[in-house]
Image 1 (spheres, rainbow, N blue to C red):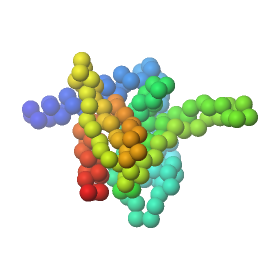
Image 2: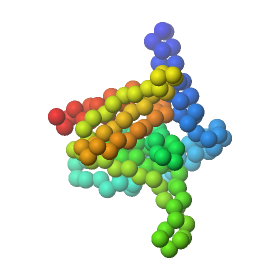
Image 3: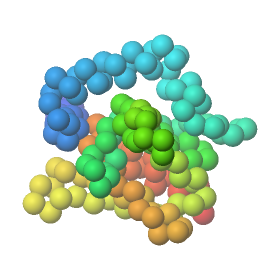
Length: 168
């Protein structure tokens, strides 16, 4: 019973952290329902991944996580895909950008990191609020990407660690 209570506490704190990063609870719920509907329409996470990103021969999707990507404009909610060939992120919602012609475009914010470009994955937490946990992904060209607000932080971190360890 004690193990079950600890698992429930971890999950609840993951949900709390995930929701804390969003604007309003109603917006978060609408976004999650919309995301779920899109996933069902496409036919599951594997098909979503294949639709969003160019999938290579023999590439397998290992894990998908809901999280936030830290950007200079603030956290962006989306899905983190961990595959045998790449780490990829796509925002839940499209963002507005101005085109060179001055038109307003709506696109999804995407990040794609080939697995062979990864150097390390680091765990981090807020010193004043240890429940706020982050994952930093560093590439060979010294770019770093910060992800946060995972529903299950430890599973995501362990999968990323495992993916990198397969390279060595």
